[in-house]
Image (cartoon, rainbow, N blue to C red; front, side, top):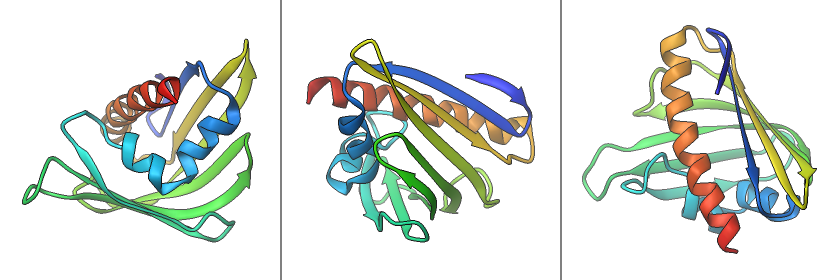
Length: 150
């Protein structure tokens, strides 16, 4: 993570998979169910995707039945397969605050794999940024495991 300011974070990963595979993992519910949660203890139980500019997504995760839900959703602002996704991010339940923020994911070819850069911005303070950085780091670790096993 690179804290550029209290309101912005940037996380990079290099994945041993092609951009098309990584892009599908970001945009298809059957893949989101498998990686989009901050730790292996969490399970993704909601993965709704209307993949078009102006379309919405919704992702829900929890530790198990009866545990608190963490549900986030937003709107796709830009979709450039397999290179770029831009979407709003707003917690419905469970997350640290309910302010709408913006996520940009870029996927570049690098050495037979994919360099992923995630930029999440418009946080009110460093605490919100750091909480999201921790969650994103866990999610991206799980994404790396998934794509390298496909």
